[in-house]
Image (cartoon, rainbow, N blue to C red; front, side, top):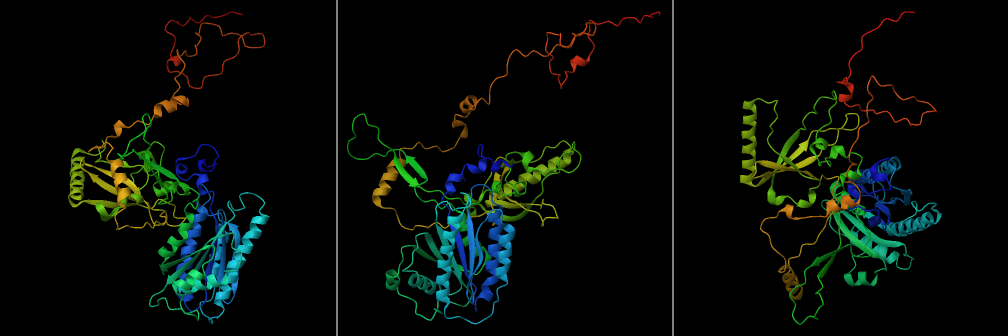
Length: 524
């Protein structure tokens, strides 16, 4: 069994992705508005994005990020293409559902009752979810927190869809509905003109129609990447019942007096954590994705020749130069490796010196231009399964005539991250408090990791991982050739020792005190 599926000690990928962190993942319902005339423009984009996303979600190991999924369509009528199923392990069924979505006709008549069809699809999905959770036989089949999120994807004007949902669902029971999201796919040359037969409501009218549940409106462009971003938001941890991180700052110099003998309490900043990318350790193609950078042995390509032959060198092709200030640290992962000019003894002196000069010139040029290099590994996968998986790395030059190699996340691994950018200054009171706290910190101009201790050695000793061997070590005595061996059998008082598998080299040599006896003829 794979180490990531065991119930024992967690692997490195579970240090952040703990199963308890994903205990409140809701079931997902996707309602696709496949009605003409704009379904012909968005069908290919949406189906490709959905196919890629479900393939990724089915292959993820670790905690369950997407427990249940259901798919509805709106065309001539509302239809359930896929009732609630578990995502993990159902790739064939999910992909067949996507193919059925592709086969929906792109031409037809425009129905005036589209708003009523959308309302019925939402209510039908909620009723189906109640029935599924009621008849679930195991805890894994049931949803963890009994809630569902509905996402409506449409090319119709988003405000009109939101108004139709608010007006149609205002008198219904929406206890199990956690969130309702309307995703408006904007196509070229078409704005927010209302095609639902009604005017776009004013903010006051929308406020009067607001439901007890949350309805969001999101507008995206008609591209596969944009739709993947919407779907990948489902893979984030949805447990927001309490904060996830407390950042403790030293107490600042506040005015007033402090009670004698009372220690000032630190300033606590409460935060939440969010994943920037999916760990490649959660995917079955870990070696090909470059996640193993712990040592050069893990990085090198496994050779297919003889066992005593060295593996061939990894080939990294430089594909682009990047400005150093344009690289975000959040897209780098894994442990770094140091790249230096080779000193392999099999190269002759002239070739080694020439290679050293080229390495020096490359490092100097990149530092002078403040560039990084984006490199791509040659495809490693077998030709019988696709075209192989390529991984990307970043080469960062150093003044010590070396490069730092770190893996870079690709499009498949990235998770959506939409953080607001504030152009305003913080309130004066909060700014004064934080500046006072930060002023108490010791500042170092040069960071030295040798000054940090983690109490690791003591922890390992307490776990018995560094237990000393038993002394003195006494190897098994080999009997001399002229001494008789002890009798073996039931009458022997000595228990037979297990035979040593690894013999000492010196035990194979003749005893220096042993002398060969002359042969004697024995007469009958």
